[in-house]
Length: 287
Length: 293
Image 1 (cartoon, chains in turn brown, blue):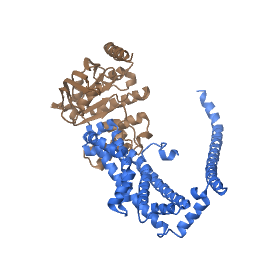
Image 2 (tube, helix red, strand yellow):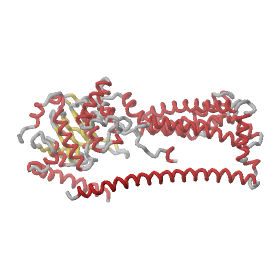
Image 3 (cartoon, chains in turn yellow, brown):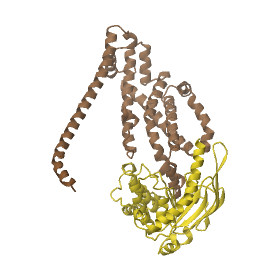
Image 4 (cartoon, helix red, strand yellow):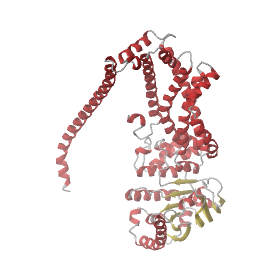
């Protein structure tokens, strides 16, 4: 069981994710920005990675290593300076279809109630209002927020807001889910609960996931594959396959498993170097 | 486990003191409210009474500064006998009409242009120096030009009020668009929103907070625009009533006119606050500019 490749799970699940349409292929991706002072700044350099359909891929790296930039390229909101991003075999030009985003900061509409927040995806896709409401209600039930339809985001706790964001991100059954430190701002207990719920929902839908985090435990507990990213310019340093069995169940419990600790230890030794390097550079710059 | 009997024991006592605490709290609140209104009343009595006293005792010349009791008389005269042009209500209506038309015209222009420039970086870069120049112009003087160009009627006043309102609303709408949460925009764009949908679902509702906040100030300026327009030259309106009183060396009627327009503005302010509460019902209860005072 432990040695099963992630592709196997992908094949077992239904929907678009089981076909090649959900494969993300990033090859030799480079992204440069113009800074305010007019100097070009290379955020990521020559990044190549492939996320198989239905695979849960986590990218871990020190702060400011271009993890978020990579996501921007996959979504199609930004254009690569060099290299290419292909989703389902098609080069990304313009906004990629079938993608959902989840951010660290709330991306909920403060002026819409919970129900309207969740149903924005289907509404933008042109679904009728009645169907959209029914679907949104179903998703609110799935994330355990039935009865909160009329609340506004500011009336919810951080964890509840995350559930709304999760429902809003998954309601369109995306083939690709891009997550940018989605649980970064939560307290430890809420974080663990949300991670477990994310895994549960992901196992039902099986979109390909590109999950960015700086929390190694989170990456190992959730992902099929963990990529270590170096900083300035960002590039992929190493890739680790996580062969923990699925379904994984409670994230809290996984952390105590022997295999988890081994993997975590192994990856940490690689990550540590990068973190120290990044730290030395920032503290050097501050001095 | 030892805590259970403890809690059970404590509960009745807790309940009783709960009621007592609630009662005491309510009483303290009522006392504070009464003190507040007493203090407010006291303040008004101090200011108005002091004014009355100073003028009655001839420390200050009431010929120049008026006198509260005479201002009251002037108000009564204005409402019972009217002005030399007719009923005071007609004058109020004229000024209000000019202000309201100007307010709507200026707000509409400000919102449209603010949203447009806020979303289009290039356009805003091209036009921003010109807008800054226009904003630096003392716009009240435009009233003279409008008067010469469009005569003594309603239109030049509407235009002047609109110009004053426009810049306030415009800058707020523009800023509101600029302050839109970029995550929110990225989110709906990834979900396949067209730029029209982005505007409808994100940009406009987000900018609305700013726009509505600016309307309070904007309406005050609309009234100023209408009044100044009338002072510069008109056939009816509160501005004319005030200028006529000034020419008769009648400060009491000037103050009376001021008081009337202040009441009109306060009523409008109240209506705007109702609108704000309705449109921005989603907002967390916050200390908005108007409620803080």
